[in-house]
Length: 415
Image (cartoon, rainbow, N blue to C red):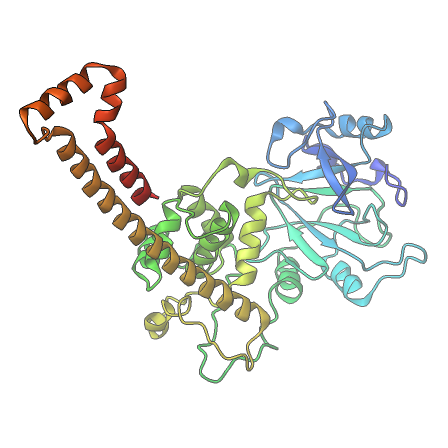
C-alpha cells in the first residue's frame, strides 16, 4: 500500500463502489522511475485497462492490497460509464497540505468528488460528463474518460462533494483553459496561414471518413499517405515511427478528432494488436498515446471552409523554413516532414537500383541458358574427347568449366 496515503474505501462515492471496474496496481522501477503497473486483483497477474477479464469488484481489489499482493487500487474508465477523471500533479505539499492556486481554482470550479493522490502531491477529481475531444494533457493537468485506470485512495478532500456530480460546462471550460494548446501566445510569421485549432468538442467530425481518405490521397503528399495506409513501413526506422507518421496525417485531416483518428487507423494496414495494449503507468494504451502525441505535434489542421480549401493540402508539404517567430512544435513538424521526404527519395532510388539489377540478372540467365544448350564446336576428335569427358563424373566437371565461369560471372553481377 502507498506509504504516503492510506486507502479508505468508506469515503468512496457509492456510484463508484458498485461497479466491477476495479484493478490493482503495483509500483515498479522502470528506467530509474517509479511506475504504477496495473495488476489483476483476482490472479495477481498483469492487468489491463482495455481487458475487462482482468477487472474485479471493489472488495476483491481491496483484499489483494490487504494481502500485500498489490500497492493500491484503481478504477477503470469505460465508454459505458459517465465518469471523467481529472488528474492534478505536483500541486500539493504533502507535509503542509498547501495547494497551488491553479489546482485550487480547478477543484473549486469542478465542484465534485475530490481526493488526494497516492503520492500525496496531487489530486484526483471525478465528475460526470463527456470529455471534449483533442489533447488530454498539458503540463500537470490530465483528463481521461475511457481505457484508462485512475488510482484511488478514498482520501476525500474536505469541503468538496462526497458524490460525483454532473459538471459538463465546467469540464469544458477547464479543458479549454488548462489542457488545450495556448495558441494566443504563439507568434506566427507574417506569411503563414493561421492554423486551425484541433477540435475541442465531442460532436461529429467536420468530414466523414470517406471524404478524409479521399482528400488525404489526393493531396500533394497523397502517395506517402497511401503507402502508410496500405501498411508499408519502408523509409522508417521502426513500425512505431510509421504509426506516428500516419497518425500525424490523420490528425491534420480530421482536425485532431481522436475518435475519428482511432477509427480510421484501425482500418489501415498498420493496425496491429499492440495498438490496444497498455504500455503506460496511467493505464493508457500504445494507441492512445500515439494519437495524443500526434495531435500535439501537429501545428496545422485542415479547415474545410471554402476560403481555406485551396491552401490546406500545402500545409503538410510546404512548412515554413525560417526560424523567426515559429514555435517549437512547428519546427519539429517541419523536421519530420523533411525527413520523411528524404527517406521517400532514398526508397525510390533503391527501388530503381533493384530494378536495374533484376534486369541484369535476367540477361545473364538468358546467356547461361544459351551456353548450356550450345554444342561444342570443333573437330570430330575433339567431339569424341568431349563425349568421353561427359561419360564420367570427374570428366563431366571439366566439361562444365565454361558454365562454371559463367555462373561465377552471374553471381558477381548479382551482388
